[in-house]
Amino acid sequence: MNTVRLTVRVDFGSDRALGPGKIRLLEAIRDTGSISRAGRALDMSYRRAWLLVDDLNRCFREPVVTTQPGGAQGGGAALTPFGLELIEKYRSIESQATAATKLQLHALEVALRNRARRAQKRLKTSIRAAMAR
Image (cartoon, rainbow, N blue to C red; front, side, top):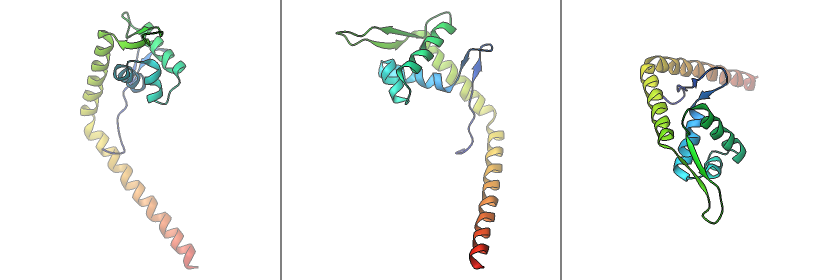
């Protein structure tokens, strides 16, 4: 499936959620060891990245990310064991949801392709007819 994909977002009430953006940020922090580098890798400002991390840390009983202030050692950020577990749980939910909806997603993809082909043919026909005049 190239054009159709399932996006999973887990809502924790009306003002808290966990979705693909926060998970990508956590994965980038895991990979870079820094909130600022993770933000840059995702074309996100440091402030936005920091606010998302803060939101995650406040959302759960355990912290998701720990930070060390800068200085001579350079500071940095790391995922806690719970943060690593959170990524695994989310990716598992995402994988199971995608597998469960595979047939329906494929049907949607097929429908989109057929519609796009018909629209393209109409457009080309209209241009040819206009040029022939």
